[in-house]
Length: 163
Image 1: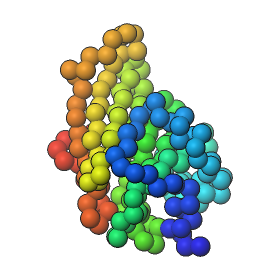
Image 2: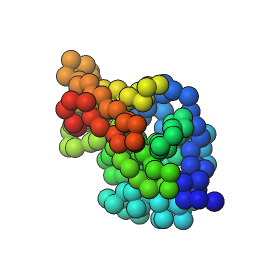
Image 3: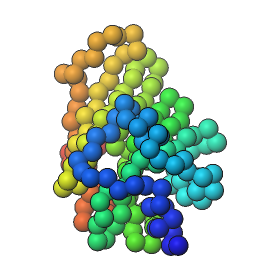
């Protein structure tokens, strides 16, 4: 089995569009096999240089096949930070590009959240907002909208301001 096949094995293909938010992590956890420790050590720890022994990973899905690259999404949970990571891979299983596209970050009293939608044209629409932990109401007028695109060669780029 090639390196790429070993990686893709853990990620079921999905139909687009697909929505990613913290509300969906339980669904992915219930519907996927956990990564074996060997896979975490050999693959994910190479992708995630800031991960430690307490970082958790959950496979989510892979995007429909492309001629030049494959793309997978997994959830990465660390201390006060949870991310849905989008990784594009060349046909040898090497990383082309990697970006956080949704998740939650807690910094003191400020909670930042991002929700993403991966569209059929391989654009990723992201809505990012913040709230204070002490506030009961979320103010949507302070949210920002970002767009990313997966280019034909697998590079992930931001259209406009990068987060």
